[in-house]
Image 1 (cartoon, rainbow, N blue to C red):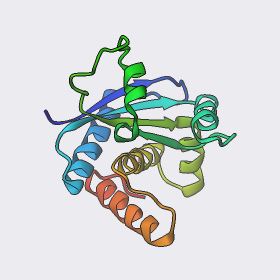
Image 2 (cartoon, rainbow, N blue to C red):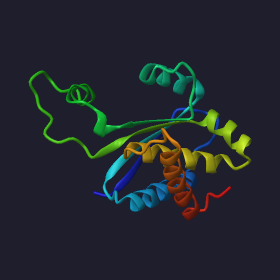
Image 3 (cartoon, helix red, strand yellow):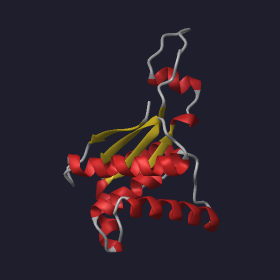
Image 4 (tube, rainbow, N blue to C red):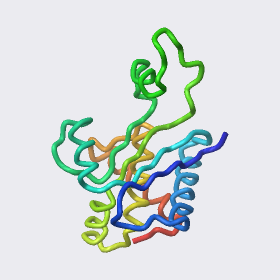
Length: 165
């Protein structure tokens, strides 16, 4: 297996074309290489503010929209796997597909942020994607030092694929 991107578009704010998906696939490959991750699947969904607001409230208890959410599969319990894969009572999952996790991005929020930061929407979406990917791998930004590490990794990947400010 190799590092794969599965994506879904559930918003109408921005047309997600094959050319941009190719950029996101390049981001995934570069970020994976940098982190030593060569196998697995990342599921990416583009949504609007209403959808991400609902998810943020339900899963994080925060009652407002956000730009990106990440749900790592390695944090899911066996009970949750039984629900996801619709196992019958007593049935065991023989092998878990090699899914690293889900990343959900609000295109509306990304558009506002790209205007605020003065760069393209594509660059902001790429930034949020690599940010979400690093969260799937366990990175966080709870303090200045960890935020600096994540920021450096994100900027390096975006520079490699040509999404600069």
